Length: 109
Length: 115
Image (cartoon, rainbow over all chains, first blue to last red; front, side, top):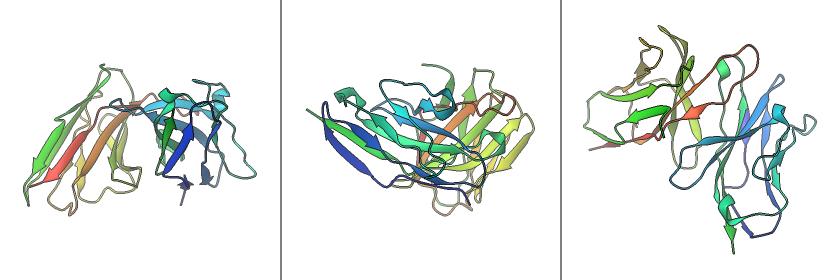
């Protein structure tokens, strides 16, 4: 069965510090990976997808097939980055997603 | 913010009662999904539908039922067979385009509690 692991429930960093939210997956195939984010009192929304290879709000994520990881990174955390982040591989047909348990990022001043 | 509308926002169920959660989308999306969110467990897929009048079970379909009579609507019924229904329920929709997986768009959710 496909599994996705986000080892940190809570990650607390100071403003301006680098951020790395970890995601490891096990999936037999070529998954497509997404990061979703939920800001306070907002809907869960897409942050970025690995095939786009773009930076969104300063965040990037590289798919490492050897390590089966898709860590989310940002060089300098901002207060507005505080949110819940979910890693989600797409698991086969029907555009289905398997969500990790999420990491709550807290950026402190 | 339109797109996907879930109602009600809060719902209470008595023991032995079936309740139906509404999900409507005006994005002309092909696929719709229901997830259950419990503390510390992320989102788990209950049912999904790629086309009208067709749907498939997700990872935790037992005790739930759905219908897809219209493209824009995908109601979820929590039946009395679901022994632990207290949770936050999220509905989502997406386009289906070829082999590329399209982002899912989410509603605000419905919080279901047992009286």
